[in-house]
Structures are given as C-alpha cells and as structure tokens.
Image (cartoon, rainbow, N blue to C red):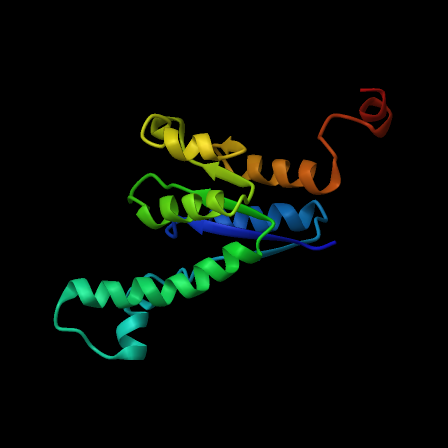
Length: 160
C-alpha cells in the first residue's frame, strides 16, 4: 500500500526535501504532497486567477480561499499529516492545517524546536508525535509504515 503524507508549514528551509530523501533511502512506499511553496505564487494566486483587489485584506482573502481548495483536499486524502513550525516566521496556516487534520481524525506529526514547546502546546496536544528534526519524522514514518526500528533485529522485535 502506498501511503500519502501531507507536509504542511514552514517554506523557507529544506525540511521537506530531507524527509523525502530519507523516506526514499529507507525504501518507504510514500507519496508526499504539500501546499504551493513558492511564496509569491501562493500569496497572489487568488488575484492572479480571479482579478485584482484594491484592498490588501481582500487580496489575501482570495488567495487564502484558493489555497484552501488544495490544502483541504490534500489533507483529506492524506494518511498522515506532518506540520512544521519554523524558527523565523509565524506559520499561522500550519496551525490551521493541524487543527483541520485533527478534526478529520488524521494522525499528525508536529515538527518544531524545543524553544517553541510552550507556544505550541495546544497543537502538540493534538499530535500523535512531536519531533524536532526531519530525520525523526523519517524514523516515525519508517516505524509506522514498515514496523522497523533502527537498532532492533527481526528476532528482537519478535521477542518483544
């Protein structure tokens, strides 16, 4: 069975690529999906498609709604949702994605640094795992999909 994993959140680092590369190295049967990560295209999609807005609020509103068509559809189709909160920017959309996924009963893995634990405590409470690195996410995916854990042989796993 191919698993679908939606990668939500921060768009300014290579965390998605690190997860995809790690999953490929582990031989996991995973398809990754994500929001549009080209910042300007994501911000301007509504007005580019539906027409200009004089007021920035309506400009952003159109973009958010057009982006939501993609985001909601891909989260609904996902087996697992990974939500990354970065260091430099506030990812309010990622908090929404986590809440939406939780409302749908999707398993959520949240990724953020230890310094954001307090600020994200409610988001973390909705998650089934909270990781600090993309490599930890890959290990969780590997264990979830294949049932394998580094450092354990099949004999050890069977005995436990």
